[in-house]
Image (tube, rainbow, N blue to C red; front, side, top):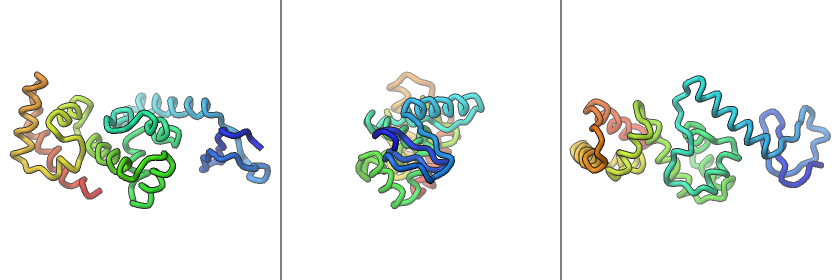
Length: 181
């Protein structure tokens, strides 16, 4: 029986609990360091292939301990976070796996949806946060004129070039659609 704290990999099963693996076939013990290397390798591969999925490191409303727990669950992009929190049952399961509250998971999901807007990157995320839009819900709840004015004020405050009106309108419209996702 493996020692406590080791991870077991059985094709599609990753579990933290030590188990008797004598009859499971094709099982390898995977140490936590090996898992970290696998995650880093997957990140490098995604970067090399130009995958545009933002890393969960870009989430600003998450405690470092929860970030580490998400990575231990194999969630290292916002796309994977959104997939693993798609339904209320999945959100509760993820909360249990990361020792977080359901409200925490909802908050992470809200920000992850914002980070996955088309033509949206790190600078745009900072801009919208400065404008008072930390997640997709606040964006969807705003009216167009209010959103446009808040982003213009934040642009001036941060000393940045304003995003083009088409991108701004696109983010606002996407937010209104994605809020129910």
